[in-house]
Image (cartoon, rainbow, N blue to C red; front, top):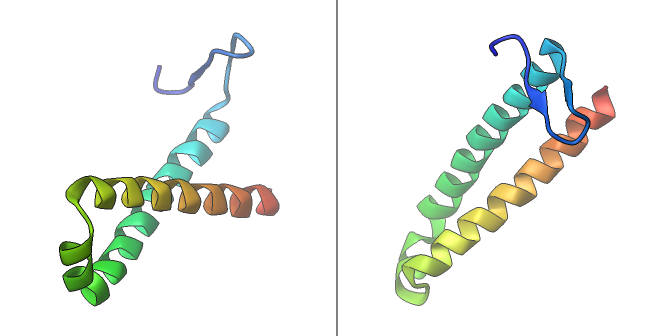
Amino acid sequence: ALGSAYNMQQNSVEPMETYMKRTNTRIFTGIALVITLWLIWTRLHIVVLVAMPWWGLLILAVVIFFAIDYLLAALFRARS
């Protein structure tokens, strides 16, 4: 539903505020990932293209995504 998200662990419905916080965190994480990858790419694209296969770059992007996601989640938890 639009106003709630189903939580599988507790078999309950989350309030809209919690759902929006998670959505905002995902959006901020995505934006931070794009900015981080862009900064890395503009400075190191020649080295990355020469020394790393495409799947290595993909793995690196996933690792960076999870690191940024963890840091942003910790930041938002600290503010709550």
